[in-house]
Length: 417
Image (tube, rainbow, N blue to C red; front, side, top):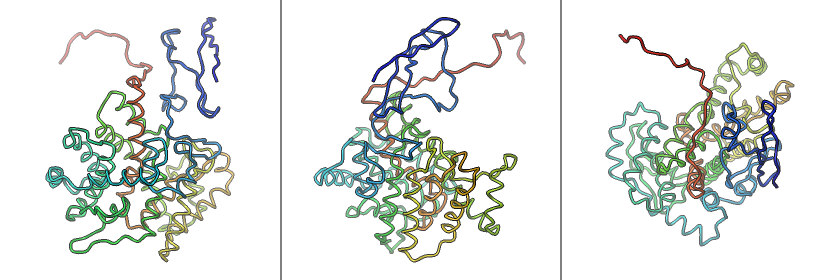
């Protein structure tokens, strides 16, 4: 579909073409030559209304609460695919057959070891560092240790859980992780995290399945802050490892991936204070009160985040199957019910997002709060790599936003000092 729009500025008419995505709700005015033709640029803080690329990786319909990976609904991907199969799909565009996924897995296991050089460097990292800072630094080191870029996507898929586990163990003064060539990807991750000297951790299938599904839910999500960061670095032809390292740092922020930790801390505070939900709901509605209800609302979704509904079920099933009592989950479900019965939240379309339930799953598995965002990064890795790959294959121009200058006019220096 193609059409034109007319823009009138100071009585002059300018014609611009439009472009449409697979679904007609993805439609854009092509302002590529706006400054050249009119002298104007668009002003869009946060890039909320600016399409920076064309992509075929994932699709969100925020009004209907739909998320597709390469055209497949997230509900079907969760039900029928493993995390490795999902990674293959996101990286290659199609689902693997049995031979494809077997080869994919074998190639990943080829790099399933901790490099001695990286281990030597990691020994000097202070344990006070945040795991996200450690992970970002270690990923950037891969630029040095895979100079030939041999199977770089599979290499990074193999190294990321090893380095994430190393970050976790550095924080706890534990010995470096031992990898298991025979174990499935997520099972190996759990072993590397939780095995101790002379005692190998034997992951429960229920826990492996829950974590695998949560990684799938994080695998890609259009042009979020960290993905756009990776794409921008890719547009300058920065290498994959440094681009992903930058994506990890973008994800670290509490407005992005760090929100899942803040949700758990909020729920713990509510529980400690007596669990009076009405009090906290009223605080959230009071614009003068600094309290914010973490885990509610999303930039894109104006309906339920489909990932949140799936994560809620994962949390419920996990806790039920493990036969454990979790007052935090009970509180979260009651808070969701209470908030969604309030007209304030309905009118503002503030529904739970994935951060509201993902931390509950991590906590039930035994993953500490400061590792929540690291787990998010592990899940998001296939999407980051696919976007880096896509922008390089498309040979997109280097990202170079404009600005509106509001500083001083030209002035002269009379004297310094």
